[in-house]
Structure formats: structure tokens, C-alpha cells
Image (cartoon, rainbow, N blue to C red; front, side, top):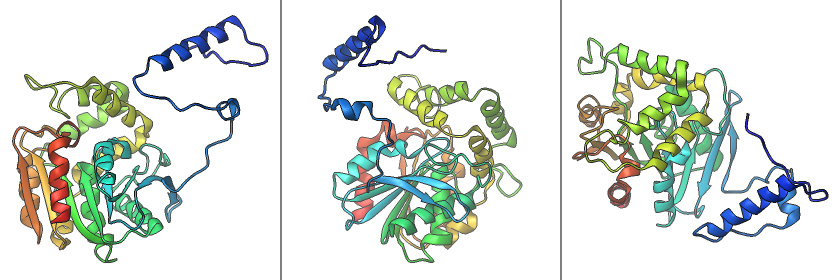
Length: 331
């Protein structure tokens, strides 16, 4: 176990003084200014007060869902739905882009993920969508654009079909590298992935989640396993950090949610303009059995395919994806 050095201002010892000196040296070396803290604020043990930019909403079944809410409250809202096994932090590049373009941006951590409650039950698309609706109602979001990545795309499809459109709260939707209509290979979905693939995900999650959550972003998720790919170690570490914040049980059971949920009827029920974005080198959710099928089921769908882009293109190719999202939203 790592040794933690604490500092008693009344009785400083040699190790404490050295620790403070090292910390001061690190701060001085940072390439950006660090806000000063008063001694009283730096020593306080009280939890920070909640403010209007983040908080929790409690669902009907008693689950605390964490959310972020940035930007002008009278601006058009964009709500982001993250993928497995991540958190709302995965939307940093999009939330910063859109808040700086004058939008209100909202993102939440799915139940069992990130900072939301690590509950034992409810890790399925119906609960995911209902939890998103709880956030929408709590913040009274109207005329909203809902953008979902991967599993979050399935969440968006179920939310818009079952909650958002019936409540008149949705303007548009975007499915990015999304799992619908169905990932699993079945008799009616011969192009899907075999059950053994998802069983291997479950085994890796149960046996050694920490290593699995390094292997995925290091390899196929961002296409870092492709020859000539530019690898970003910080992106890999951030993926791991987000994953390990969540519940192993939620992640384990979430695999069934994203792989075995048939969302054909959800897609057919959506009537708002919907943009389907997918990279043709997606190694996680192959395009042939997802985006190419989804757009045919949507009443008002538009497909945009990105040559050579990976599953995690929202991060690695944000300079291309963000302007395309903006054009769709404004169009």
C-alpha cells in the first residue's frame, strides 16, 4: 500500500516539509497558472457545495444519476449519452466545442458508471433511457438534440422513441458509432457478431477488468493497433480512468444490454431528423451491421460515413466530427 504523507502545520516533520517542497516545485513547473488557495480552504474537510453546473437527480427507482449542465440556460440544449464502460467525461471535446459555440450542453453518467450510483440492478436499455429522461425532466430540457455514442446511441434510440418524442422534448438525434439495430448474430440478423465475442468480453471484465480496460483503448477502440496510427497515451489512460470509476457488475451486465437489445422498433418509431455517423474502420461496432441498417429503418435519417475512422473517432477526429455535428444541428 502506498504511504501517504500528511502535513500538520503545527508540527511539521522532515517528510512533510519535503513533500510540500516537491509539490511547490511541480506547481512551478506547470505550463499554466494555478489558482491560489487560502490556507483555510486548502485544509477544509467539508464537501464542496453543489452548483448549477453539475449535480445529481434521483430516478423513480431511487438511483442517483450524476450530470453536468454547462452554458446559458436559455440556449438550445444538447444532451450527450456516453458509451460503455465510460462516463460523461468522454464528451469533453464535444461539450467544450458546443458550449463555446453558445449551446447549453448536458451529459450524465449512466447508472453504475462514473459518479452515478453503483446499483446492483437495472443495467438495461429501458432503465438507461428512463434515467436519461429523469435528467431531462429535472433540467426541463426542451427542443433538445440528443447525441449518443456506441451504447449511448442505443440509449438515445430508446429514449427518443419511448420518452423524448412522446413528451415533445426532442428536436434532433445523432447516432455515432452506435450499436443499433442489433449487434448479436441471430437467425434474423446473420451479419451480427457471435455470442462468443460478447462472452469473451464478460470473461475479461470479470477476470481482470483493469487489464481489459487497458487492452481495449490501446488496440481497437481508437484504431491505435493500425499500422501508422498516431497513439495518444493520455487518451488511453483517460479511457482506463473512466472505466475503472464504474461498477464491475454494471459493466458486466451492460454487455448484454448493448449486444442483445434489438432496437429495430425504436428506430422505426423515431421521426425527428436523425444523423447516423460511423467510421468504416470501426473494429468495435462494424458498420455493415449497424449504421448501414439503422439508416434504412429511420423515417428521417441521414448517413455520413468516415473513411478509415475508428470507433472512438469523436476523440481522435474531433476536429472533423464536431463541425459536422454543428452543421447538422444548425441545418
